[in-house]
Image (cartoon, rainbow, N blue to C red; front, side, top):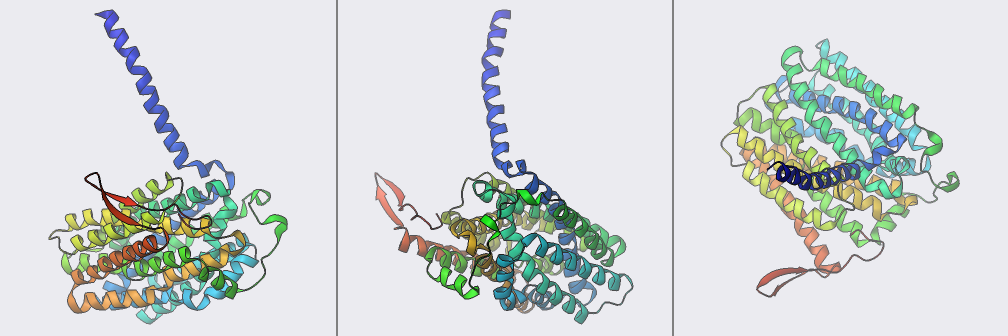
Length: 449
């Protein structure tokens, strides 16, 4: 008996060791970009700042929906439009700035400006001086600053991580952003209930110090910059012509437009469902926003473990996203609504990370800033069209109908992807051997897979 027991234990150890080794390899692969000092330092600073940013977003939506208006979802949509609308107007200049100037210095300027805007909004709120038009004003200024911050920040990732780690670095950026999204709204909800919205804005202002410190202490000599410090020639028009010759990029950008403009209006969807349908307070709203982030974190974690993005991921995640929002619009209890938000969060993050990585990896380095400016203009700049429309639908037909706007957007984005796969990748459905099979060609060199 004693010998048999020892033999069984010895036989179990190799299997346990193999499982532990596989787990370690998976974790090492998922977080491989953190092995580089510059990316690791940037990620720490960005995480702190992102938590503050999500706290401010939650507080700002609550301030407009409850404190400054009587549950006016259209007003929330207008704030979102002003905050993201400048992307369309400033895209040509922002993309050129990201390609022609030191991205690290551009980010130091834009991050400092965002911190000052948060400070101003916070002080006015704490002293009871804030009015709706002033929130609109601050949102518009923030939109102008982030128009320059976005292209520089997204393309700066390619200087922090090597080309082999770029896809992983993009996914970890999303993981950091959504980990902050998990924590920030919950903290904001508690703080709003305890001390009001103004102090939340002030905390966000302080959080920008972390990312500014990380930018100051980067090892500049170890950044992956263009050979010889050369600056690309040509303007934004060259970027447009570049994209026009690339059907893979065109279709991805079309999918992103539909998905982001009409699907990703969660400040409207969650706030109206929380207040109008489930009759919750600021704490419930913060909790539901954090629950949404649980799905986003899971989606980002899964994306970080993938070696490369695929357009098929965009199609699948868009379709399931639409289905999740459709179900969320019909559930009778906020806990079931929260469960659907987790599914929607996984799909939204999968879609966004795959789109971001696909565009960056399929674009030549000298065009990356301008193409990412176009990508961000579409990702965020479509909000002035989609957010007010979603808010109007929620005000006119009810919060549940507002959710259906997002559901339709996800399905339409998936159909655009299917159109690309059929036209350029030979997608076919065949019945072979009693089973339905998907037949598709490999991606052509130089295109997104």
